[in-house]
Structures are given as structure tokens and as C-alpha cells.
Image 1 (cartoon, one colour):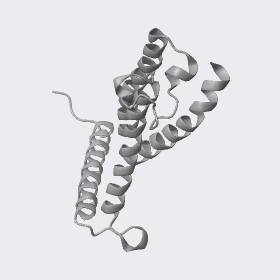
Image 2 (cartoon, rainbow, N blue to C red):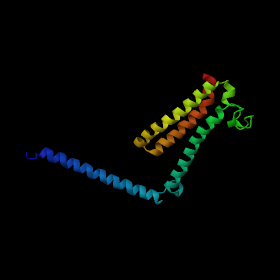
Image 3 (cartoon, rainbow, N blue to C red):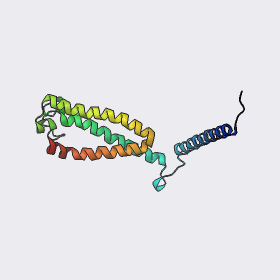
Image 4 (tube, rainbow, N blue to C red):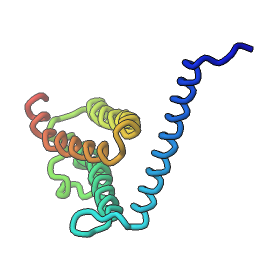
Length: 159
């Protein structure tokens, strides 16, 4: 066996220091999460940060699911069982009726929406792992709101 050189010892020491620092960071993260769960961390107005986080998560997920549910109602024709009232008073004039879509075009619009929805779930998971869930969820809700607001303009301008 060959004797250990000082360069190898230095490399091993540096590696051990890095391992120790990583372990200390994990311990700090665990304690930080424990304080958050126990309500010891206070946010705006003395409200526990966990309550603020739950509030933001609820409304963020609620708004994203509302958009997902509304696209199906808005795309269905007036006499469709989805719009059972027949006069579409809740949904106004459906996109199907307004743009004169065929069944194929309606399927393409809904398919594009739902395929984009599924792909954004995968992309959101990757981004959340890299940047954190709070930032990604907040950004996603803002993007959904922005593009939902642009939908009528885009539909009338480009269709």
C-alpha cells in the first residue's frame, strides 16, 4: 500500500468539512421547519407564518382548479348537459356557440388546455424542487390569472 500524501489528506479533510456543513444545514432546516409547524415563527401582523402559508396555498389551489373547471363549462354548447339550463345563464354565451366550433375544434381546444395542464404539473414539480414550492405556486397563480385575463382578447383577435 502506498503512503498517503498531504494532498490526499487535505482533500479528505475538505470532503469531511463539506459533509459536516451539509449535516449542520439539514439540522438547521429541520429546526426551522419545527419552529414553523409549532407556530413560533410570526409573519405579518403577528400571524403565524404557517397560517399565512395555508391561506395562500388554499386560494392558490382554489383559483387554479376554478380555471380548470370553468374551461369545460365555457366550451360546452348551450344545449349540452354541462349547461343543463339550456340558456347558459351561468356561463353566458359558450365559446362553442360564439365561435361556431365543430366537435373536432372543441376537442382540440379542450385537449390543448388539459395537455398543457398536465405538462405544467411536471414542469412545476421540477421548478419547485429547484426554487421552492412557495415561489413556484405564487408564480403559477400569477401566470394563470394573467393568461386567463388575456383569453377573451386572444380568442377574438386571433380566431
